[in-house]
Amino acid sequence: MTRDELTQKIANTIGKLKVLELSRILTEQRFDLRDLIDITFYPDKPLAFRAAWLLENMFLKDPEVFTNNLEYFIQRLPKVTNPGCQRHYAKILMHATEEKEQSPVKQKLNSLELEPAVEQLFDWMINPKVKIAVKVFAGWALLNLRYRYPWVADELPAQLEFLMRNGTAAIQSAGRKMMKELSPSKSPLKGRL
Image (cartoon, rainbow, N blue to C red; front, side):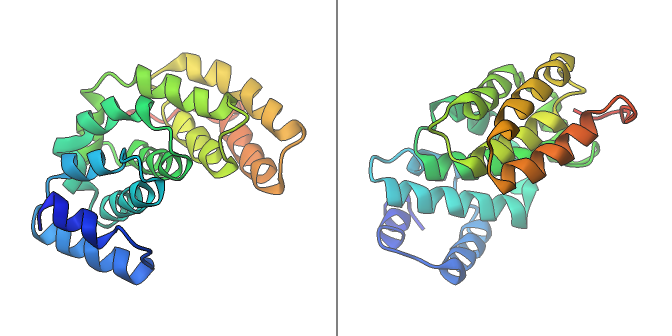
């Protein structure tokens, strides 16, 4: 399938079954994920959202498909402005950073400079216009990165407390879980990002 053919297939509303089918086809055909990442930046926001949804499903089904494209994904992350795409990008990063140390995804992440991604995740948490789901996924990704960037463990609690102050039930629940993980009684796990 070409980039143009995929763009045509997702130009109109699609459901979960179609996303799963397209994800399978793209994986089987070794579709260039750079092209799919680029489609997530289309000016047509619904089309870009559907591309990001495909991207997330491809990652969840087979994270190793992403290994050769993680650097490009991380480079593009700070440029994501579409709220629907932010959700999928944050969720992908949350899952990528929780991968097991020996996984190809984790090994590739360990070789990349992730500080710009960390800064973007914090920006999403701070920005009042960013949707709650994005903030939650960003928080979990940051939590996963706290051993690689120790300053995250210093900054994240204050941001969580701020969000929880007047936050929704979802942010309250996720915030409490993250704060528990950040508590001094939790010992760092060796080899974490």
